[in-house]
Length: 159
Image 1 (tube, helix red, strand yellow):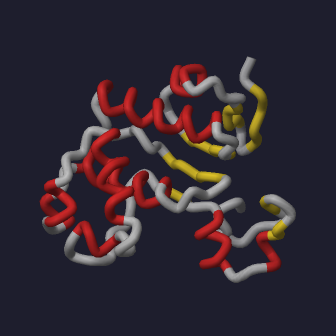
Image 2 (cartoon, helix red, strand yellow):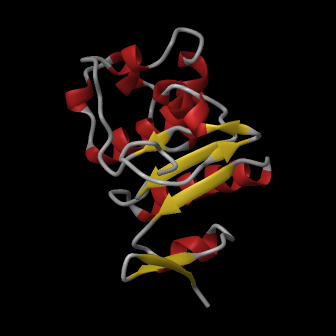
């Protein structure tokens, strides 16, 4: 519902702007959604970043443990973990006030998970709202997050 991908009922707004009041592509720029298996539409990595974003993307990717070299190569040469971290970089460089993340660290090794979580903690401390789905029950605690769990198609607070 928040990502506006499936038919739904109800209303979602961000900083007074209603999702129903804007085109889906504009809404998704305001609230980027990083899927568990991200899509890549161009052959080369750098083509997924606007010219002015590339420098920031490289810097952020290095913080997440991805060297600068993959930006100059084809997407199909990236490892699963590199793809996942670079998909997160694509969302983070938009400086959105909110992020939707589906298993953002699922395919990552523990060192990479720690780096991603450090960046997410910084974003949350700066005021970003982050909705994160994870199968790692400890991840919510590490992120100092309010935790909910899905039980019989309903969300309930985790105690």
